[in-house]
Length: 223
Image (cartoon, rainbow, N blue to C red; front, side):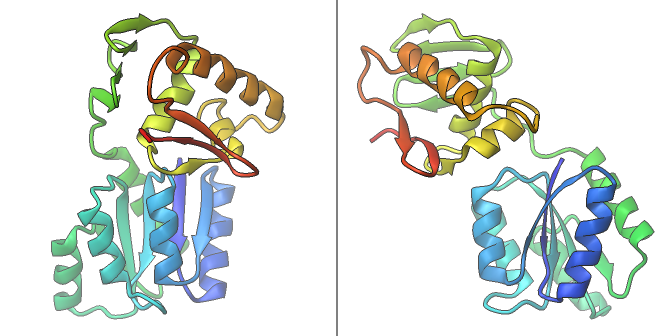
């Protein structure tokens, strides 16, 4: 499970990050609302722990943007203000839960686990880009109406690129999402998989969908 912690108090952020990592979660952090919003938009997070009082952009503003963008991650709001009005406002904006500071880590962890048990919004059964279609339930891929046969890893890479269409996906992210974050996954294994995937879904078709962004990773977009 991948979690994003958006918290400007360094000690609090480190306390949460360390505790969650010890529980086996993959954790990223952001120290202000704007960078937190960009990370949330650019990553596949299962849950966002979001402080209300943040520099650059407050937590309510970040939450509003996340929900407007349709991002399905669960959101746990943190606040030093325990007024009912604040909690109601956050919940109405789309927060899934609220935790008032100061808090015990055990309670935070319990709330995180409870939210993750709910899962995230159901993924669309059909992912598309141009004339490429991926049926996630049947694990069936077609391009221009032609059946494309992929290996399990090729399918995993393609599905992840489609979920993140329009965003650069790093090799580290693919290793984490497709190879289950195996620490010794060689970069050339990922490159070879992407090469074979391109041969199957792009060669002979237009437009070419999968692009290499030099020094960064891969990008799937229609133009």
